[in-house]
Image (tube, rainbow, N blue to C red; front, side, top):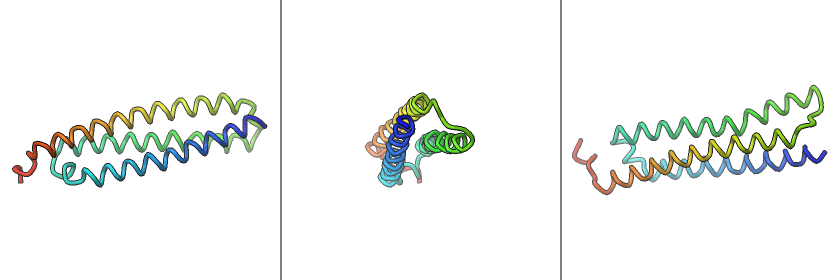
Amino acid sequence: MHGKFMLAYVSLAIGLSVITVIFAFVVTWGYLYDEIRHTAQLREEFHSTIRRLIVSIGVAVIPLVVYLIETKRHPAYNAELYAFVWVACYVVTLLFLAWGLITLIRDAKREKKTGLYKFRR
């Protein structure tokens, strides 16, 4: 039973972090909307960050669904290992997502500072 409780806490923590990541992404998008809309390079970086967000959400949700389907057939004896692998994969996707968001924010600040998109209209 210990493994099931650990998996429940892991899934709760990952679920809360997914909500936090989506909130941070929406706030970043709202803050940088004008720069993203007017600059092709920032739009491309933004789309890349959206793909990373989708992968991150997939890594959070798909293993849980597979685990729930798998446990209906037979009991899960390796829940600790499963939780560890799930967390490790999720942390890696979060690192890539954070790297993409940091790059997007840095480039958007540079674009905002120079203001070059205002003259392209």
